Image (cartoon, rainbow, N blue to C red; front, side, top):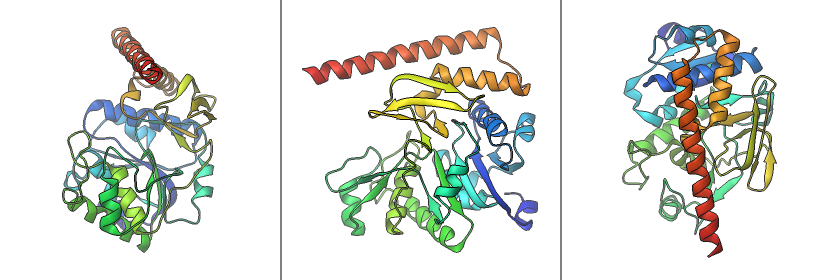
Length: 306
């Protein structure tokens, strides 16, 4: 945060996101910001950025300078405690959209200094694409690791949180020896690092049921989404979920529903709308992505039937 904000009293609670680097990430941050202004207007909003995009100042109450020394890619998430201007912080990834006032997050994490939505664990015999589960469990003499998506993190400004993030940063420094796997060929995934840090602190992920934050990855059937009216639902692992926050992680940022809702938010808040050419390209891109997704799902079903 800026020197002025470091010297100022922390705000009670708020949301923080990261929007740096390529313009597409800044644009995602603006879409998130608009959804927050629309559906959680009373929450202060902070963005960590290296962009001078003037719309960010209209959408966020705190503009926090990006610190390149903290590292590239998701390494930045391991320094959120050093960025946040809030006593209670909810980090939300920039490729998310918010559907309501987010009161559910403050309530469910009220007694925790660090928390993340989730319910799964990795144990002996489990596998994970970003860490060697068996090695980590043996190395640290622990029985389980929390498994979650890193679209949201909650934390309080306190000594326990500082100790937790310091532990995570120590793991990052030693990530090669600890056999963490590269994420996008640029360092380990934040989920893997924070999962181990949580296990070492005796922390578990916290189930928010069918609410909370959900990603449509591996979902089935239609995705129903209307940010203006705070509506969202889709089927995930046999259950219909109703996210408070929907996370368009990875390739799902190419989903037409995300693009459609982002343009609707631009129109509502007077942002610069994309040209017809840009909209046409986005529609074609999303159609190609939908076809490839359908083909992959069909291939999986056929292989499963053999």
